[in-house]
Length: 112
Image (cartoon, helix red, strand yellow):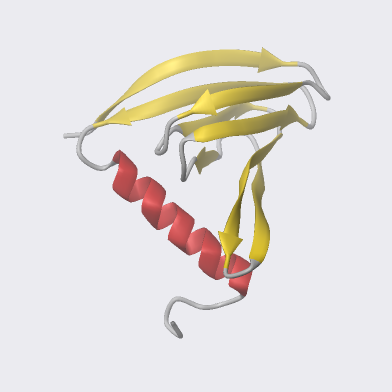
């Protein structure tokens, strides 16, 4: 059975930005408010693609690669960083990155 470890719970004022060093597979949770999350850009062929999303209260984002992540509060918010413990965190991060790449390319998984 997989479990998770809560790394931090951070309140953010509207407009506040954090830069966090995270491991692949880290789950960022918007416990309250709206957050903009930007990971380091990824290369696809010869194109640099931004990797980011907006999550609302109760939504999550799985970080696909270890490195720096920018988290901005679009309104007053609370961010939790959770690291899954068990055999699956890197697999989940890899699958999330694959799905995001397909979405950015406009491909449908059934067509690939």
